[in-house]
Length: 182
Image (cartoon, rainbow, N blue to C red):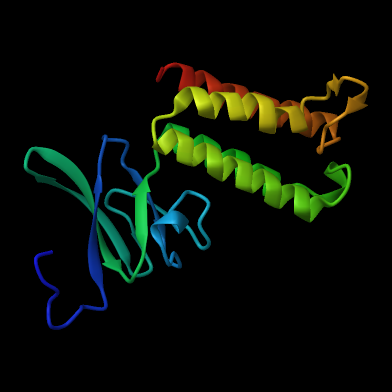
């Protein structure tokens, strides 16, 4: 803006670039852009034409670019929830929903650490650092649940074999999608 308006409206309209997926996420409690991720607290996921609480989402074309237009925004941000972002969110949601007995020890610390690792991967993907994201998925997340022994010790944080298999399959699908972007 060349200058701030005299009055700042409480409700805002948010424009999010669209690739045509048709789904966005909104982060109603984000206080900075760093908090605007598919992992944000109180995330709202909406499809075009949907209303959720105060939010409504539609599309608009401006300068030959399609955008999602989200109405009813109060100090938040959001983004498009494409297949890659949704995969990362699904992996995190699955891990966070696991019972404590699925972990070797310190389940809340392990869940939080895995969430942080997935957030780092999201940032790499958002910055189009796809190979780095793949490397981190393979070497820093998948190894915590792959059931393999690394050297002389088992470094798995997740010990339930069924859960290990499901997480590894989810990660492998995400890696496959990222390989298509290289």
